Structures are given as structure tokens and as C-alpha cells.
Length: 222
Length: 94
Image 1 (cartoon, rainbow over the protein chains, first blue to last red):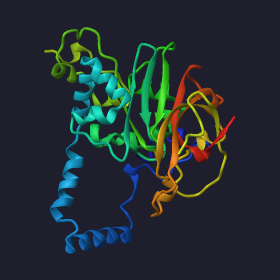
Image 2 (image 1 turned 180 degrees about the vertical axis):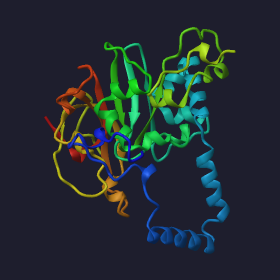
Image 3 (image 1 turned 120 degrees about the vertical axis):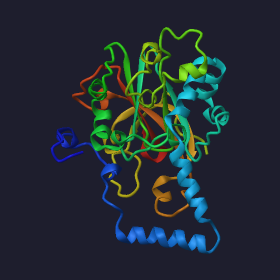
Image 4 (image 1 turned 30 degrees about the horizontal axis):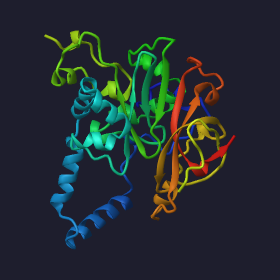
């Protein structure tokens, strides 16, 4: 967020609290913290508890997750009613089929319908279902998204180009504790008979955070 | 550990001033909502964050609030809701 950005929504609501600044804007950790991290890491490696390769591998694994995995899960839920029931009721077991382990958190899947639109935010920091969606987008960690999503969700959605009809309920999920949230967008019309691979092309990252709908067939078909 | 609340119960979030790694945002403190579901018991984040085990575990609920309860001048529809996870020691029966 630049200095010229409109900050009016950041500070207009004195009842808000924010544990610190958006992570995206945080300055580098203090020198003390950096030295502490390096010291502990080097000690663990020296003593053979972990290896440099373990550290690299862990970073690689975190950063290799992308929304394509979430899209596959959504496409399967659209196509396979039994899987969808399992995903909604016992997501741990359903996600095993995709090699996803959410522990120590749990995935809570919320379904968009004709009557309900769900969207996800973490007001306190930037909790995000990383094992299924990867690294969160920069805006997800920004203070203006985090404060306004709970305060004026319909206005935020309009700014994302998503107009929610008045008769449809908007449900905001503040991801503040031990659950992580995945929005199951509505399956677009005109996709009858599509296989899961083709369906997955309609499922965007933003539609799984709930700031947009899934793509329409016309958006992806050549 | 038996949950103190059941889905459908009305609860009020405590209006408590507490420093530390508290996962109850200011904007829901003092507000009244309804238990949506019992999530289960989890380590207490307020202790976990400062190097303790997080024991005793705390029961965690998802609580559903009408947006109009949270914001007097809410500019959406009256059915709009916000759902958030609150630990049992932050909830009082109504």
C-alpha cells in the first residue's frame, strides 16, 4: 500500500483491532530475530537434528503448492456427490485422496448456493489454507482487505467485480483460529457432462477465497 | 471435555481487555451471536504462543453473528452474517 493510497477505511472504525501490520508491509525482522533464527537453524544442523536439505525441502514444498490443487478438489466435488459430502463433513479423510495434510489445522469447506455467498478473510493476520491453495495473494494480507472484508463485504466484493444480489446472503468467515476455509464456488451453468479436468479450468484462486465466482465456460473454451 | 454450549445456543463474547496472543478480535467482544458448530478442543493459543504446551485444551466453537449486531450502521442486507471461531473461555451464556 503506497502513501498515496486511500487509508480512510483503515482507521475509520475504532472498534477494530489488528495484531500488528499486514505481513506484506512488515519491515525486515529485527537483527536480533535474524541472528536468533540463524543460530538455532545452524545449531540444529550442526547437531544433526535436521539437515540443510530438510530446510530447503520444507521451503520448496510450501512454495510448490498452488491453487491448481484446490481447483482439482473443487472440480471433484462438483462431479462426485459422495466426495462432496465427505469433503463437507470430514475434510481430513476426503483430502487424503489428494495427498493433503492440513494438520494441525482443519479445513472447513463452505458452499456457495443460489441463496448464500461465502467469502474468507483473516482479520488478525493472514491465515490461509496453504496446503490446498499455496501462498496467499498480497491483497489478502493487506490491512484494508482485512478490515473492510468484515465491515463492508458487499462493497469489497463489488470492487472485485462481484455483484451479489440483495436477496442473496453474504457470509463472511473470519479465519482467526484453528480452521482454514475453502469456498466451494457454484458450478457454472453449461458444464453438464464435463469431466473433472475440464471443470478444474473454471476454478480460480479468487473463487475459492470467495471474492469472485468460478469462470463461465465461455471464459476458457477456445 | 464436555462442550458447555450446543449449536443454536445464544452466547455473548466477553468484553475483556487482555494482552498477548489473543484470537478474539475486538470487533466481536461484547457482541451476541449463536453457536453454529462445536469445532473441538484445541491447545490454548494464548499459552501456546509463549512457549507453553497450550494445556488445558480449550473447546472451540464457530459463532454466527448478524452483521447488524456487529455494526450498527452495517450497509448490507439484514440476513448477512459473519462467522468466527471463539474459544469457550471467551463466551458467556445469554
